[in-house]
Length: 377
Image (cartoon, rainbow, N blue to C red; front, side, top):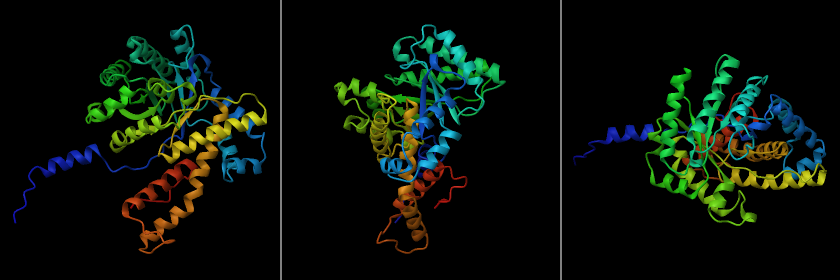
């Protein structure tokens, strides 16, 4: 029998380029959004100090009961060492300044004056859907040029958030604007993250198989916007929550369309703060925030937004407890599979073992392990 495989090699090359084998790399477990008019050079330290003060409201035993694991010391250490992993200066929904040009300069100077920037940092510009793309691009250009002038270059970790992408064409327009910005400021290639905040966006994601490829590597992440999305779906205010089934649908579309092409995914936020500084109100906020973080993790979204210093405590506590709860079991199953023996009555398929290895590497990064131990298959 003569087997005809004409054209296979070219198709296979396209497959490998478009759907590369996913290597688990460090990804922030959260993004902190701070309105540009409220940002100062001490914002990150201030958030860490406020979160640490809230941590003192409970005992270690109460903390372990609340979050389901012995993670008190880990959380306390993180708040002292690196309270914010990813900072976004917000010129969109959270921004209420009267003079965006002046606030842009002042916020950029605040960022430039920070003793140490978070591992990722950047800004969220206004949406092109607002009808004034020049405003967004003027803020982006001024913000970057001010930081470059103050710091003598662009520090590592910079990223741009592009919100409310109601039209697919806006992505190409924004990418071309970034190319012009690079030439003007002498910058290396800039990347950005889009926000999925409307049913229109979910629809064109499903209908545009070449969307990521068409952006030529500029799109690096997609973040879900819960409140705009649920409002656009017509949900009543009390149902505008991260764990609503409508949000699950949008996130699953993001996973099926964007994740296979190497795009990082992030969940949204809980728009709530403690009703007061009392222990009762702080713990109530932690409980609700913990529910949403656990929901995100269960659905394969390992990053989310934090909007208040209190969220740092529950974010880190839930993420650490989540990874530690299964780490030893996953490690044993991987070791057993490699040794070609059964572990605990589980017959793992190769695809499951790859998932176990990925989970261990993700846990190592989240827990701050310097040399991830899971290795590759």
